[in-house]
Length: 503
Image (cartoon, rainbow, N blue to C red; front, side):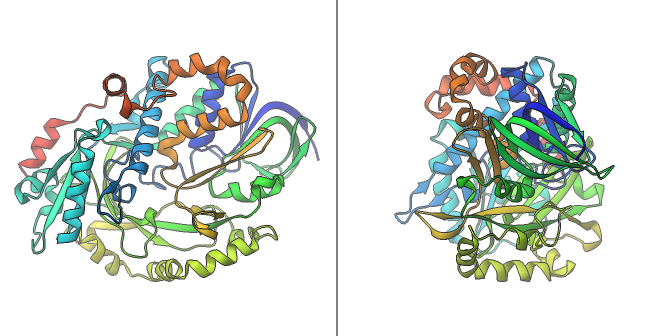
């Protein structure tokens, strides 16, 4: 053991979550010392990397799994409302940082892009119509458009409609206020800002253990470059290591870490290598997940802006790997099974056999089988125009719940905090990065309740809607949308839309 150091806050993992929490802390308590440990050599290389996630800017505008049909036929908007409200919080915070000059060139990490939901088949069309009728009365989604008209559909998404055989009904909704978010670029920008404000960011440093001490935590860290072990002490620790968070949470030994497991799901995208095809599409088009598929495997055809270049991705095709991180170990799943969660994991295994079977069939698919699924979106897609790229690993949370019973697989983002507020961890997947600001404010509220009253005016300066529901305050919602659109330069590219319509 070499080096022993103390700090106020340790953030584990240099992804979008740590970047967001660190930035919030620097605004609310600039005197706090913050140290970040990341085992890779730069920020945003795992789940936050632009090619490891869909970059959708999840706002529940097009994701059909966020709006479910109840037994009585009505549409449940609960999740859609919550996700959209939370994304609006992120937009407000990013706008604040841009206005203050703490983030520059917002077009490098966010672009305006229509979000479209597309369905086929009589029953699905009926569902989408009911969903539209419900959403258009909601201030959050009031700019939604709906059509079953093939000519209008061809105007919205010419590549999708070209050479399509229309047999059993087709419909789509479109919301122009959607976005494409490059979370990798945003993460790197936030870490540049954190380092400028004095945060100590240590790359090539892997956290190996955490032990509770009086008034905080002792964190054992391995310097990957030298192989030496360092010992650091912090009053507060945030575990934001993506799929690696579960193992570290278990090492804390806190009661809240018991009866929680993880199930890894990998993803593959198809990336278009033909610029002529890429230029024919300008939207994110989401379909419905196949029966048995996890929500993160909802098929979507996405325009992306990566390194200032327009790209086109389709997927994700699900798969299975026992690794919890793309750069992880094949032993990750096995070593995550502990006496405290073994029955939870076994119960999940028994419940999720159909999901396991689905993932195995996905893994063994050939490229041509994957092309068949792509052709449901682009009927005339050519194999030579598309390349396979491996996306990031997601670890879905498994826990015992009142609703689902023992070993219930959770699809979403899960926050775990210790009772004394000295440690917090983030587990799970989508909507994840899109709701990072809301999630980190929740962590601050749970872990620093005594400071929240003092911080509230500053939080409201950064997030004007803090403590309110925008859907219940249409005037504030309008003001927020106008401000964020102006500051983040989220103006729809009408010229591009006109050009596409003429293709």
